[in-house]
Amino acid sequence: MNTLSTNQYIKPVTTIRNFEGNLAIGGCDLVSLADKYGTPLYVIDEATIRSICHDYKTAFEKYPKMRMMYASKALCTSAVTAILNEEGFGFDTVSAGEIYTVHNAGVDMGKVLFNGNNKSYDELSLALDFGVGRFSVDNFFELALLNEIASVKGKVADILLRITPGIECHTHEYIQTGHLDSKFGFDLTQVDEAIDLILNEYKNIKLHGLHAHIGSQIFETGIYPDEIEILAKEISRIDRKYGLKLDEINIGGGLGVKYTEEDVPPSTFEIGELIVNKLHDVIEKYNIPEPTVFIEPGRSVISTSGVTLYTVGSSKQVPHGTKYVAIDGGMADNPRPSMYQAKYCAEIANNKDLAKDEMVTLAGRFCESGDILIGNVVLPELAEGDVLCVYNTGAYNYSMASNYNRVQKPAMVLVRDSQSEVIVKRESLEDLVAHDIIPDRLKK
Ligand SMILES: *Cc1c(COP(=O)(O)O)cnc(C)c1O
Image (tube, rainbow, N blue to C red; front, side, top):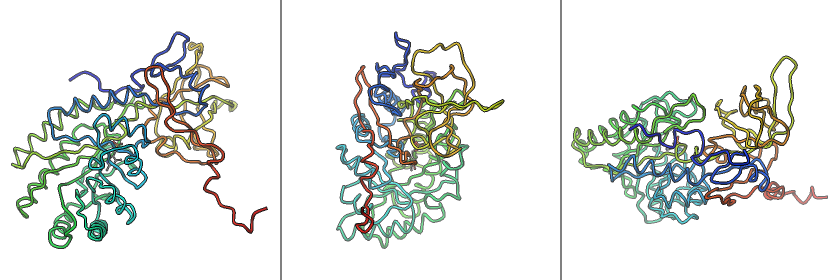
């Protein structure tokens, strides 16, 4: 199929230059949004999210037992959850906070999966109380703990076993997870010991299938078929050895997006076709029942829908060196460039003489030399007050944001059909001290 899928675009699908010469997304003028709500500002385009969901549904329509589980950690807010819930996605969660948010947004908790390599007693307990559909159990400690909590509650926990399939992908080392020496999951040689425990000792655990997740920002298409091969083979081996018919596999997330022109992520349609064909192959080859298949995309579902608006402030020309232009945000609202050298594209949102350009380094406002949002980028000559739009910030920006330098986290607005709605309020100065306590003896 040669139609592009939405994850192959850098910008939200509704991005245009309007009659005033300003950038607009979702029919909303970005300069007006910056005026109205202030900057930095996260802007999320609803049409792009829905277009991506449509891509996923189209890509997998030939496999009715495919379940799309949005990986909430990419961006977990109540409104985004509500949109994806409407689109029929389930949710992959990794903390009590995400479970609570998803529950609060009215999601059927049977469609929620709980992942993580060190879930606490309280989190497992809360997940059981909320009726979370599946636990992806990561290790022996968790298996014992979950069984214990479930037995106290008189419940049965429905689980998948997270395994490490031993597949490496060529992404940043910090976002690789499927290689053998990973902190996540059971090694394949430990699976039988886990199954023995489940069958003989852990009466409050019911095993449904296997889970693997290879990594993130994946561009290689061959990884998913390789992974399905390993999971299916393991399922048929378990059937032969134990007579246990596991009928669920979770192939994780990881599909990449296009942050810059150099990035060439595969199309969702192509990945879908490869996965569906491979599933049909292994079902026949290993003679296993058609499994329910979970896929847990996070980044590729939400990244492209988001942009961040900043206002340009000071600038500094190092004599015979770099020209730094500073914006009013940076590593606290988008830690990815300083954390793993992530690259982004930016454009000036206001009407500017686009002919006069220069090479600059966009510096954040935080007190770290590493707080560089984009190094060596050619942009029209920037001046104080210009509004800068950074693309593809929907995933792992707000969800990784901090209050470093005691700066308030930005607001987030949802745009659609020329309307803008605040979906996350900007933090206030009062919010910043709301959890502080001054011991009485220190009070003046
Ligand atoms: C992070 C993660 C995902 C989502 O990864 P993306 O790269 O955002 O698609 C899915 N499953 C698991 C287990 C994860 O840890």
